[in-house]
Image (cartoon, rainbow, N blue to C red; front, side, top):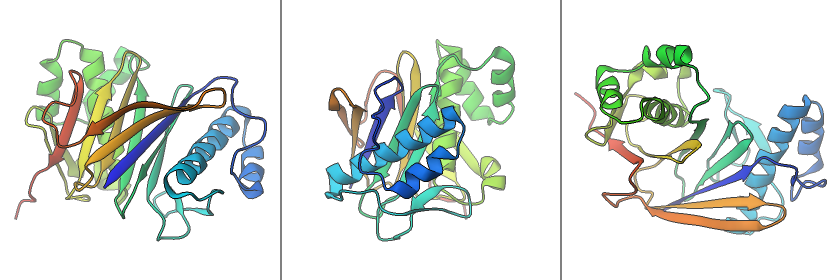
Length: 243
């Protein structure tokens, strides 16, 4: 199994005609304010390009919104995906072979000290201890928060999900009552932190960047089971559920 993560770095290179996107999606986008319209359309164009690249489907299939507010394909036989925004960056994560996908992205220094303190109030003692042990406090807070949000996007009872999730970053483990079998990988780049939550059987994560001018650019392939993915990367896997 593999996950496929593609992002578009917001600029003026969004094509005037939406690539592989049906008119119904364009009509929905046109009812949104300018900034939301651009991000909404860019996300669905990226998803359409992924479906073409991975499955050879030349037009974006019909979408629905699930009861928990997550976009999904109307055809349940099609793969799960997740959409995220951070500043001008739009990202899409696609999971194949029946796997689940949850994506979150955050700009590293977008939160004020006050908002970071509010984020810390939602974390466990183990998460706070790990953050305090890191050299870059702001980056560490952002990583933990991004990990949490990507896992929560898998689905479930979002109202209670935050309190049913425990991360143990020092041990590389997590426990989620709503999603008991999951893995998540998070990496901190100079400006952007991203986290992909996927099914535990996922062996590879393929990373791309897409632009109208340059098309697809391979960033790297991450072997999920490697013990050392990168100097600023975290990979957490599920702990057995308590009886």
